[in-house]
Length: 259
Image (cartoon, rainbow, N blue to C red; front, top):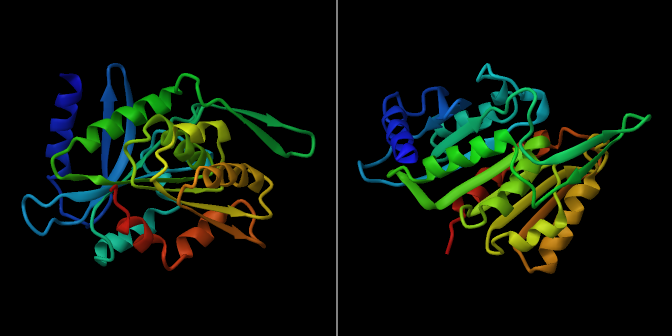
């Protein structure tokens, strides 16, 4: 009953603004906790049209509760694309709380400021991931969402969250685009092997080493998954700049659908 009520509230709120004009603020509420998110949606061509849904997960530097910081990287790209009618659909940017993390990851910092990550694919979801799963489940049930065209992407911490979601909700996504992220290769066993995936990373990334993406790509290819892998030789951690500049990116995402 609670999930149905939340879905009903979201349906009303997502229909009560000027389509494609600006990012709208909302919150997903579950018991005593909440997850801020921003959303923008193109105007449907007819009342019963179903639109694709894209969720984008920000990095650790954009955590908080202002419901604004998460738009720094990628917000303009998707808003402009909807305003210019390059894409049609609903785009959602949730915001992770300051002291939380999308993925269940242990981060270790060494004397040279290098980071290592240990991923726990079978562990309990973080509080932020639990709220995100609730938001995803509610959004995916909205009557105007095309359940065959739901997409997930993210950068850095959000790239890690993207890989984890592919394991936690394998049936949900038609496409995914993790940027400078990583995950546990063993979790690929849980992926839907028909999900289209495009992985991005900078070869000179010292924050999240490109080997984390490479390991995931290698394992997915072992399972004959459809995966594209873009490595930028002169780029550090900000591979999202290169990814967002890919002329094919938006077209590639929004052409994907589940069979």
